[in-house]
Length: 147
Image: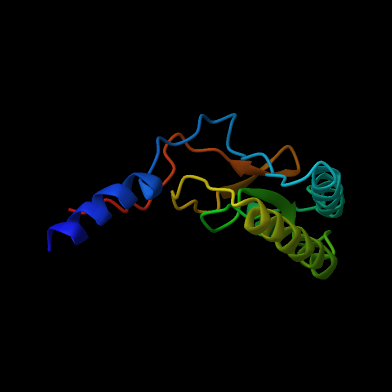
């Protein structure tokens, strides 16, 4: 039984929740395994962000968020806000899936690791006719430490 407890103690620090990011630092940077990978991921992300229209909504309920990228420990590394009435959501989600798969492959090949906090999509709001993600000071986390 002791070897199992030792293994759990050694593995637990890799998946502990971390402090929530500062309000202006909510995004993780993409991880690249090779110099040629970074421009490809950056291009895909720029294309996805260009597809996400933030204007044109008349109510906050028309604003949505979409997951961006892939964190090595799972889940998206960021969310982007968009207006559902003016965005071609099929094209947006197709591009975001292409980005997710590319980043997931880079993470797999490079053996990248990350913190394992669980990131919920942010709430959205309409500010001056523009859909925006509402930043909170406390990000919910999933604590993987044994109790």
